[in-house]
Length: 242
Image (cartoon, rainbow, N blue to C red; front, side, top):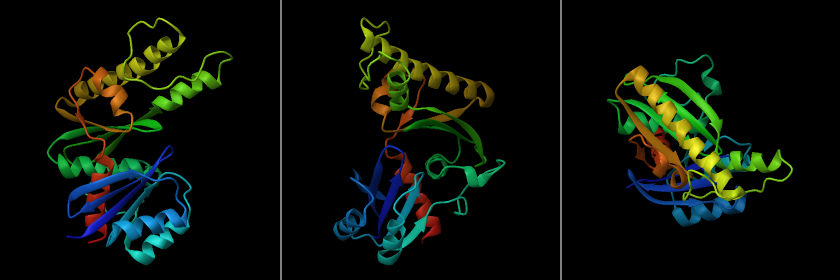
């Protein structure tokens, strides 16, 4: 079976996942995007195909290496996808949001899908059952909120994220976690309820590294899948790089 290596370069982490056929075999976080790191990964994984989703100014040599050693596709607004993007400027849609949308359409094609991606930012991505990416919203992510309280105040500490959060904090750190983590959960629940009120029957997908901190605090029924963006990248690769 064909081996496909999917790269997801986000603002916080650079990640990769190997598919053998349609099965995700391994996912890992990269130390960096240096030529040595990419060459070493290709030598170990031995993929025939590769795809890159990047929302950062990554090392340009990465694309040259992948094109030289694999059948390579870079995700962009010119990529062929199984949905329409009736927004004003499709070229402004982030590669990560395109990948999440592709995953929703591929795995849940008969539903209205709300995909919530939790990375440096929270992205809300709504895809209709007619496979239209209509739009959504963007708000600060967990780490960004915690860092901003520390950066923009004189005495508030930088608190580490935790899923064990009290409703009422008992010291400064627990007050911050209550406000940030539970505040994010209430925000997400509010968006989900608003979308359900407008579109009635929707499927809610939650993905991203901060699932472990937020999922247990959401009252709405969701499907949590930390590898959703990789599954979307694989589906896109199959269309654009057969």
